[in-house]
Structure formats: C-alpha cells, structure tokens
Amino acid sequence: MPLFHPIILTTLTITTFIFLSSTHLVLMWVALELSTLAILPLIATKSHPRAIEASTKYFLTQATASALIIFSGTLNYTMTGNCQITELTNPNLMMTLMLAVFIKIGLVPFHFWVPETLQGMTPTAAIFLLTWQKLGPLIMLFLMSPLINFEVLSMMAVLSAVVAGWLGLNQTQVRKLVAMSSIAQMAWTLVIVKYAPSLMILAFYLYSLTISATLLTLDKLSMTSISNLLLSFSKAPIITFLLMISLLSLSGLPPLAGFLPKWLTIDMLVAEEAIWVAFMMLMASLLSLFFYMRLWYNSASTIPPNTTNTSRLWRKPLPKTNLTINFLSMTAFIFMLVATLMKALTK
Image (cartoon, rainbow, N blue to C red; front, side, top):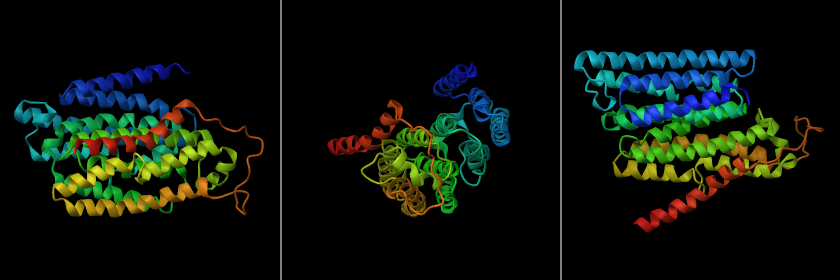
C-alpha cells in the first residue's frame, strides 16, 4: 500500500469528525477543503492524461463551490455577527449556500463534473468519491433542513432524476452509467431532507452499500463498457450474480434494499401533500430503471457464446469473490426484508 493511502484515510476520518461535531460554517469549510485535497491523489493515482484531466475538473468545480460557501458565510457574519449554519437568516445567502452544496454533490445543472471525473478514476477510488466525499455536504443539508426552501429543493431533485435517467439511456461506458446512477440516487436522497432528515441518512446509507458493492464487482470483472459484460457470467458466475443483485437493488425493485428508501420517500411526500413531486420522481425512476435493466441483461441474461463483437479473454485468470463483496451484496438483499418486518411491527 502506498504511503499516502493511510494519510488520505486519516484526513477523511478527521474531516468526518469535524462535520459531526461542529455547526460552525468556517470549520465546515475547512473540512470540505481537507476532504477535497485528500481525494485528489486518489483521482490522479495513475499518470495518465485522463486521470490528470479528471483531477483538474474535480478541483476546479470543488473550488468554485468552496468559494461560494465561504462567500455566503462571510456575508452572513458581516450582517449578523454569526457563523452558525443552523442560524442563517438571509434567504439569498441561504440559497447561495444551497447551490454550493448542490455543486459539491453533483446535482443538475451542476452535474457535468461527475461522469467526467469518474471516467478518469479507478472503481475503487470512485467508491470514496461517490460515498464518503458526499457525507460532508449531506451533513450540511441535514443541519440546514428546517431552513431549506422545499420548492427549490424539489425542483433540483426532479431535474436531477430526469436528466440522469435521460443521459444514461444511450450511454455505453459503465463508469459513466454509475455516475448517472449516483446523480439519480442523490436526487432521491435529498428530496425528502426538508420533511424527514433521518430518512435521508437511511437512503444514503443504503446507497453507499449498494454502490460500493457494484463498483467492487465491476472492478473484479475489469469491466469498462456494456459490451464487456456479455461474457461476464461464463467467466465469473458468482461475482456476476452479486453484480446482478446490486444493480437490481440500485434500481429500487422489491424486495431489495434499494426499494425501501424510495418507498418511504414516496409515502412521506404523499403525506406532506407533495403529490406532484412524488409522481415526477416515480416517472423519472423509470428512465433509470431502463439502463439498470440493460446492465442486468448484458451481465446475466445472455448465454455466451453468441454472435457478438466481444472478444474473449482467453488467458486471463478467473476473478475470485471476497468477503467484502459478499457482505455488501447480501446486505443489499437482506436489509429490505428486515426493515419491512420492523415497519410492520411498529405500526
């Protein structure tokens, strides 16, 4: 393991503790900067032009968001003498801070950096970018939840779900499809933060488990495009089966774990009389379901050899599954059953 890996993990752990223990906007800004600088070496691990380009785009986007955060915090301190994120009073500064957090997360229309950055990263490094790196901005939204404008939040969430599903329809690169999936999942995670912040935590937790399992299995199979998945079942049936479970869980089909947060989100939106938001999110999820099912079909439902343009990897050793992939994939299946039972017992 390179020397900088323990340093990166230590830095990310410290920034997480800062987010969990502070409501001061300047401290949160410092934690965001530290986490950004910690992720950059993971993106540019390989001396490849695509990795350098991805790290540059990521740095410029995150720097813009950080500038907006410190700008809104400075103006709020100038006007009120207060830098607590839970006591923002100016609606314009609140809107600026929300947009900065949306840039950090990668919601539409600030989503363009996500697929380009992931395309230049390894799948293992992408796990940190799509899960741990989003924890800080989500904690900020959690603390701001009583002050958030639901109309703006719901509009951004619906746009993100629709655009991510639409862009994924004609995409053939697996990592870009994972990026579109992440944008759509973040839309489902954030749309409910105004009314049920705890549900946002549950949705992010299940999303982190399933997206990590998906990226680990894709890394094991060395898959970069959809056409490579045509021979995955004959080469590694167990790993391909675990990939199938993770993909179906991300799509939100019952009885898998990905169905639970969407079910609870729709239930809460209907209870809060945001019926049109719930309807638009459900319609947008059909677009995402299409490319999830296309990945599932190419990985598990085709029986090679077929007349395809995919070349066989003759002498490559068969990948073996490990305990991490097994645990994450089985959690993506079992959690839904346990949560449904708990919900039934608490009624």
